[in-house]
Amino acid sequence: MKAVILAGGKGTRMGDACLETPKPMLLLGDKPILLHQIEALRREGVKDFLLVVGYLSAPIRSFFGDGSRFGVHIDYYEEEKPLGTAGALFRIPFDADFLLLNGDMLFDFSLQRMLGFHTSRGAGVTLLAHPNDHPLDSATLRSEDDGLVTALIGRQREKAPFGIRNLCNAGIQIVSPAALEGLQADGPADFDKDVVMPNIRRRTVYAYLSHEYVRDLGTPLRLEAADRDLQAGTPAAMRVDAVKRAVFLDRDGTVNVYKGYLSRAEDMELLPGVSEAIRLLHRLGVLVIIASNQPVVARGMCSLQELRRIHDRMELLLAEQHSFADEIRFCPHHPDKGFPGENAAFKCVCGCRKPAPGMLTAAAEENTISLADSYMVGDTLRDIETARAAGCRPVFLRCGATKEDPPGVPAYDDLYAFARALGKELKKGCE
Image 1 (cartoon, helix red, strand yellow):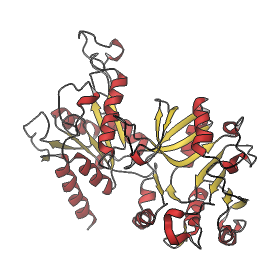
Image 2: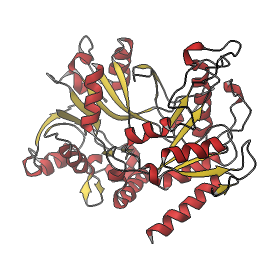
Image 3: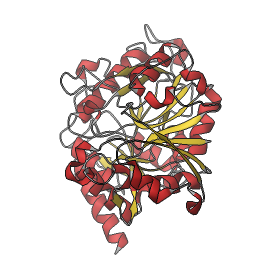
Image 4: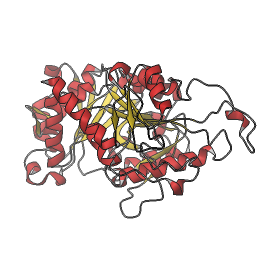
């Protein structure tokens, strides 16, 4: 597969650092950003690169040449005038799917897994997508269960909707030549506006959800943060094939205020300190996954659409405090029949309804999580039973509906108290 890297921007957000040095050539550790990218993709089997250059292209050409000393082949496309994030794509002939990314990112992800997803969907464009802590400043995606993108929503800082899906384009995409057919741009073009949007209307854009490391390096602060991450080994530790630790959270009474059977998005209210706790858990290098029974669907009290609105509302409340959950998993089933207005399609005995461990074991398989090193946090005995069934460490919170501490289980007053205790435990374990 060919990788096309957009390396011709002026890097205006970097200030004076890019007056004489193109942004992809800024040092990250002891290497230029662009070399980190080429080495990461070479590890994924990519040996054919096309660098789209323009502003201060000479240092890039001089350093990389034809790529042979780095074990790859490099061609160049020189923009005489800036062509935006897609203008060059309409001037370059492509005969196969290609990887497209910006030259100001640090990443470590499984390209083969993303390519497998892209191929299985027959996608025109596959966007690597993830939740982040600033979705109100990002373009967010709406997608169906199979990943089909149905909408691209612009930045929402000025007027956030009632809820959002915290699913953001990370800036890495696989593009098929078919996605460019019938499209044209005589001058500069924008990838989202001129490629993604038309293909959303064609129903050929898919979102590939990944928790792997992708960081934009567009500002000095982000470059410094990425340098710290690199020194700590964070990118490699977040790869999908790297064994990880997770904290699974019950929802009602753990993340949000317990209000019985929550069936309206308007009633979603976060518990105090939850956003801070989740931010701390992420700083500890763990995945945060919400795993919740939601029998309101089977009982007919709430549609799947309304449940998604509830979760969108929760994601917005977290986002407003620069926090996010990596995944939200739920079981809509209920085994008992006979409720007025119940939804018969969800009346069944399943392996995902807690205390069955199905939600946790599925998340562990998909994300290479060590359940023995992970935690299930909740406010009921059912959560404790789920943890034991999955082989996780149980943690009880006193902030929910159940007030008596279960014997032999660590108990905390709220999620933030647990996050602080976990931080101390992990620090002690590293000494």
